[in-house]
Image (cartoon, rainbow, N blue to C red; front, side, top):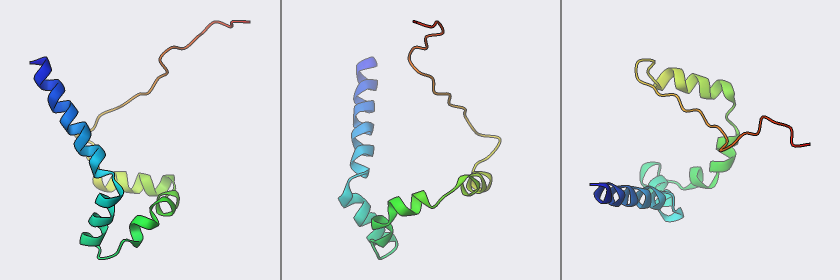
Length: 83
């Protein structure tokens, strides 16, 4: 069973990495918008967002009844001074 799950995970990782290729993004914008300018201006468009834009989008599209919390921590934290 574990081998089967690893194969599925490997497939999905490859699938999502393929979605991030230049050809995919250009084709996506061309088919949806009819122009690849949004793809070319992507970094500038992302940098134009500020925290209030993110908060407004979260309030609009995310449900308070269905969410998860992710906490990132370093692998190891030294609480003692090594000096």
